[in-house]
Image 1 (cartoon, rainbow, N blue to C red):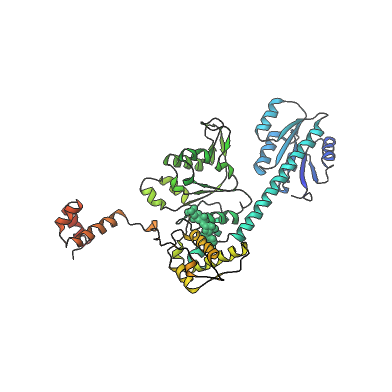
Image 2 (cartoon, rainbow, N blue to C red):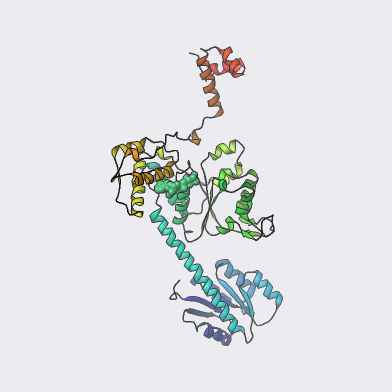
Length: 452
Ligand SMILES: Nc1ncnc2c1ncn2[C@@H]1O[C@H](COP(=O)(O)OP(=O)(O)OP(=O)(O)O)[C@@H](O)[C@H]1O
């Protein structure tokens, strides 16, 4: 924040003389814009002007300090309120501080100096917070320009539409897709397109944290909560407050922690490990997995209630091999960026190189494609990237988890295979597979398998 932006102060004081005194002192800083109100109502009516700081006389003609403070904090939770009282009363001071007052001053000969120091500190904090938000917005804009989700395939266009829809609200989003398909990119795009762009984006990968540390990573811990907890630590949920929490590889979360996460999400408050005070939080949740979460539910590895709590708006990222010519579009974009970044003359793919890229199954998806074309750019001798420059390893595309065969389909395939091998001899098949012959006969009767 530059010094040109005024720091807006409301002085709420019914004693005209004292009010003028406060205004005069605070107005000595040319960056301060100070307004005085002699009643609580007049101040509350003007809160839409978004003051940065409020000094509040405890005894106003139309309300007591507690009521006014509560109303201000409900509407402007980030605006600091300094209570100034004519009487020294420890009980009142404690109660006001508990309700979130920044400080409590008693009117005496030191009040103006103390007020000056406090306003200086708060102003610094507010300006820092503002700078921070500006920076985050700037990073967000850069993210938008540099980290665009590229692709013309209809499936990618649908992803764009869903991202825009998700960004308009705080709905939970569940992103699924094989490794390297861009799940984290989608999560960031939603965050940076949403009104939370100026707030934190916190990503946690469930598969990357040792099981015994997941709880304290997510929910935080108090000092001494367990061996090694040498200091209090704020959890990732609290860290993401006001912003977006991205839980990657959610299927790897332990069953016992799934129950705890569900509770925390439902109550919208979290208690640090070893602590006893619940802290409220406000986060948009985005989860991702490369597994079929419903299959995990069916297999008893993922809680059904949590599944439905997390499903929200599902976004499915298709594997690269199902995105047609997007492979070439992405490959060219990656080469262009890589050449620009390394001051290399632009390299083009030969027709054979394009054919090889189109034929490769890319089990590592976009991440693999990026690595392959960047290496090829380095390896290429001339201005063209030849098919031989592409370091493509022979690999099988991973099974699409949503298309995995059910147990029944697999049984049918095995029995059919065996029937074919044994020339339709039901008894031999039953003996070999150690299943009852009536099972095989029933499958034939129900036309699940056939002889010959
Ligand atoms: N459509 C896309 N356009 C441009 N870059 C992409 C696209 N999709 C993915 N990428 C890039 O591919 C890489 C992998 O993407 P990302 O990390 O988002 O995938 P992921 O699905 O979260 O991977 P994992 O399953 O391993 O966590 C990143 O460098 C990302 O920028």
